[in-house]
Length: 319
Image 1 (tube, helix red, strand yellow):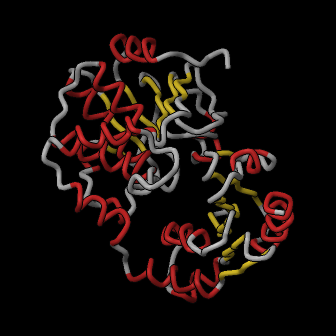
Image 2 (image 1 turned 120 degrees about the horizontal axis):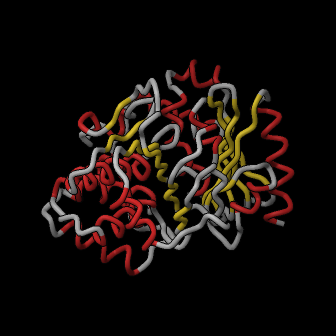
């Protein structure tokens, strides 16, 4: 892309600009939330004015991060701000009217980025946006403290699945070692990210096992839940993040999908355990993501309609 820039220009951008408003994607996870928080902390340490923004607020599962000091849920006017997005791959990952904004800089690690931006720092070789933010802050001369290491470790650990996913690099582990060296309670972070679940998340997980389907000789696994099923189970849309691991964990599964409601949309999240590019598959439905983790959303449709579409997509991928 013509607006894709190297890190040197990113460093110059942050040195020359001020009044940064950092956007994260909807349903913030550890990577987008931790990356934005760390970026705000680092910029403030350099004497810059910066704040992160997400309309939906902080999810309960990330409450161990002190987002309140660095995030706002309300903005009335963006005039005068330097708009930056982090870990946002497409306008669909933003609420309205934010989806229509043009960012001065977009920092991302997804394979494809379609966000409107003047400058794109795309590092699709990294497993987490947190790695890119780690490098940017390091090269800006920001001191690595335990306070800064907390959101950075959260970001990298979150998107790497606790450093288990294939895109984890040797450098990823070196960055993690540097962050651990500040004295953070890394074991607690991992436990809170992956092993601590609310009662409503357990309810969503139970529903996911009840709705589990196997297709094409066990090579494809699927979980599809409706808004009504979630309500009856005592779970919410936010709780459905726990569903993604259920179908992919079954022995012999090469590819999996979770289909769930998301406001006026129905969202499909793909995962693959073998040599299946689910990012390319998702792009056929105007979605995207990573090679082994991607998805798409469709508006004004039903879970059953998306389920039928996904089955037809999966058949060609796993057979």
